[in-house]
Image (tube, rainbow, N blue to C red; front, side, top):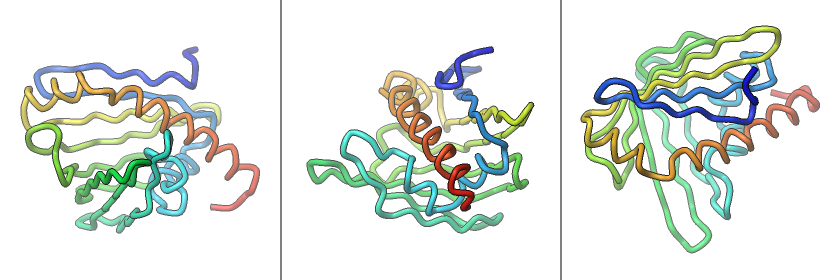
Length: 166
């Protein structure tokens, strides 16, 4: 079995990236940690001095989300999207657009959660508007950021399981 703390990022076809990561938690808990603002704010992009003070999630088909991170030197980065499909607790499809996009166009992400023996595998397929966009993302430090965020998510999942609060 692969190490649960390893994120795998692979290019597929001309425009896709497939991201997989295992978590030692049931999928209902992982789903909640990825869709409830009070939990998302505890792990998504919050490392190396970054915070997520704006985390708005309207989790319904046609609803939207909005994130805005603040960096240690006054930097700001925002992202938004619209939910296209939600099957609780196994699947979410949404669009992705950065306020100041560092790659051309936008993307559509499909997150699938599968559970086996109390462990959950999250597989996210991101379809970019172009090969150029996908390649720019693959060359970025995205994998490092994903790893750090998912490591924080491990901590949140353990804490929430211990707290018994969702």
